[in-house]
Length: 427
Figure 1: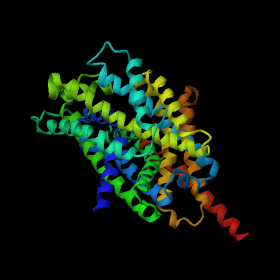
Figure 2: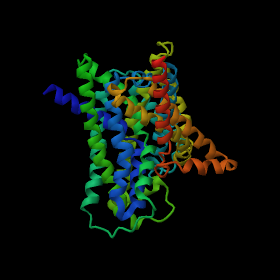
Figure 3: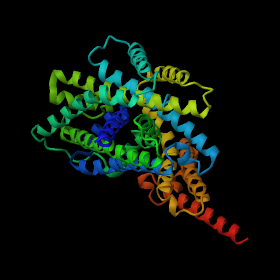
Figure 4: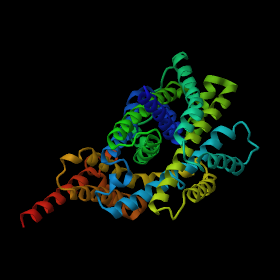
């Protein structure tokens, strides 16, 4: 009974940490654009978000429970550099500022337009700092105090939408719904967060008395499945919310405006308050989880030369400053960075899942090297108009339609590494 309770508590807390700004603003607009093809949108979004995140948690658990054990098979330096990059992305340079910006634009501005953004974000990150300054019991704080309010608000929106009279859903506004949804799934950052949040699960498990590796792996996987079962339900509901109300949404609305209009359609004058509660609690739980995780990482990386408390204060201050740039500006800058990092993490997840079948660990370097090489070249070519011919050539690679043109270079890199290993063995 204790194990079941612990699985549920950690799983629910994990859901709350994952479900933040991007999780709210991307699915509804995706539903609006997909219209009567909303099922394809759900499948595409699930592929790069829910499925990838569950596999990431399993891969981390199987590889030893830390990002270092997950990525160091490529090389110790790679593990450190990639870990720092990911921590900065899901931390103070992207995900954390986005939580504050979304909370303001969707939760505060429509109700209290006279409150300046910097005042709200100062209060928002200040309260977050109070939560995270002492990491002990952070899992229980999130699960017990914050998640119930978030879940009640989300379920109310989804159920109300399902019970509303069916609208005539318009045809999809996208030429390829699945591909677009596949790429939108990247933007939630869940795939990146999953390889990091496994560590905070382990911290919670140790506090609850699970000290042996075997039980930690099993509990981590089960808690992850609980979390993403809830997330899957919520995503499906939010995409359907957008599809069902697509005919009432005018062209050109931003992601935040779309979600607010959809909720207003169902709840009228109470819609703004419903949005405020949902958004602020969704973002705040993620802020608490991410700040704790990133601060712990840099503390361990520096052998406590950078203390946990120093880290949380620094992370909070940087996040506060960048949050005032606004949501769309933050999302705009995130695309190119994710296009380089995500593919490498994806192949690392696959390799770790099948690690016991890999006799020569140099394959990790070959596959990841091929993937990063292609992704970086594509980023460079997209950045300069003079390289349009090179960009067209790279775009002709198989699977490029799904932004997976790196697949062939990844396989080729693995084959070169294998050949090198066999030649070296023969000699």
